[in-house]
Length: 179
Image (cartoon, rainbow, N blue to C red; front, side, top):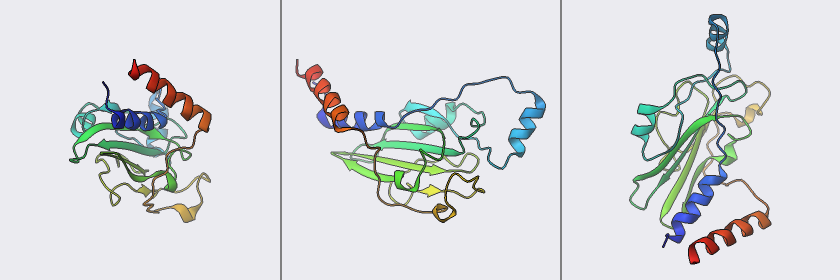
């Protein structure tokens, strides 16, 4: 039988949508434009790996797509602090808000989220409220209010979903694992 707390963590982790970048051929002029761009950023990217070392070692190395100017990191740890899941990706300013970072404990696991906007700034994973931060140091392009830059937020709020969706998801999980 599957452990209930584990299912809840997987459901919460699933709520963080993953936007994958598509690769395309870039000619040298476009490549220089990306490197010279004030908003261009390159992040470590990985999906559902077991630890940070594995993520960084096998991360796909290419610039983030236009409009995705943040590195988003989701880190789930067990009760001993050992990594269970690491997700890293490029994200836009709607996913990386000061209110969307921090840590939350769910049963015996801890989920931490951080966002930053410098090249390879997500080399480490957040492990507590001190490292699970929002950091915006590059020039804003009108997406975020300047007052929000370099803000540390200690409370983590997962995205809100309609109660009917959550009930349906929970009921489906119960039916699947109670048989």
